[in-house]
Image (cartoon, rainbow, N blue to C red; front, side, top):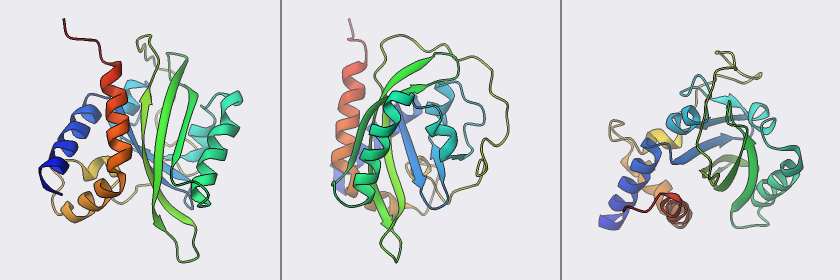
Length: 194
């Protein structure tokens, strides 16, 4: 992937480590999703390293925004749209609803042509600060909560995860445009250095 790819990887890793950019890794058939731990912690959720059921997260999307988000995701998974993109309100654990912008793409298809793995980004567009509080019990959330996923997307970017260079390059190559757009959004939200 060359110098440009390494620079993108470093920028993504820095934004993920700071909790500014959330990465998600969805397995539709398992109804399980894994979020980058720093982003999940910033929203105030316990067990940041564990996967959750998709039901747990769908219940946190504002009811007025849920249908639009799901329609956009299904349109991409059904191959009628080249990618997934949606803006919606997501209820954090303590800061109320926060405005999110999410992008994603299917990166693996099952033998029968269904989306098997979808990965993406999430950026918090809310201008007010986070005020995470306790309130959610620890432990699995939902019937699929806590199931491990094999190398979630955020872990593939980790320098400490050896032996994943080809998978990392493949995913970054497929998602470069989406990651660049999400990073530009994150950088636009950062306070200007004075």
